[in-house]
Image (cartoon, rainbow, N blue to C red; front, side, top):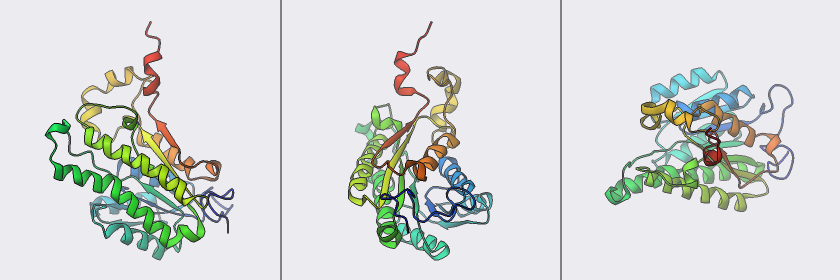
Length: 268
């Protein structure tokens, strides 16, 4: 059996019939819409069996139907300490393995200046954005990856590389998640690779309050002249869990339309 970090597989055994992820199984949190759904679709298109989680059972059922016959759902809230174990157990019971974990579920609350943040809301943000990914990684490690290898991708944010108004709590939790990513990459090597993808502004429901009022104006400031789509992020995740990234761990792949280099863009 190929081990994810030590050999070419990057995610367990490889089956060359079908897509490059055929024979592998994935768990994607927050998979009923937006980036999570796009990630599930990308992995399923490459042949993976996919378990998606979400709080809304109806939305989750719609996502499972959209992902196809090798998809299953596990409704629940990642803030519930029991949910990570339940989601991993559901995937293992159905698929008999778990090669890929994508920690996508997140909250951007509480919004506003940090001096006005309710400490209890701050604690909830850390529970969802940092503690839950750790619990999921632990459950996946114990259930499959410790003995068979695998790949983990945590969805962070381009905002970890800077600051912005009203998203201090969100940015702080995602910075902590990036630090967790690197720590896990060191601790779980060589059998498990752990990486992050940090999107810029993407057309999701959670970010609607940012992009909808001024999408054209925002896009005009970016070197690639558009805001992101969930599929842009999904393609990055799909690559990181594939064999093509088998010598990559502990990295943060920024997918932001060039936002960090926009200051050097010619304006005239």
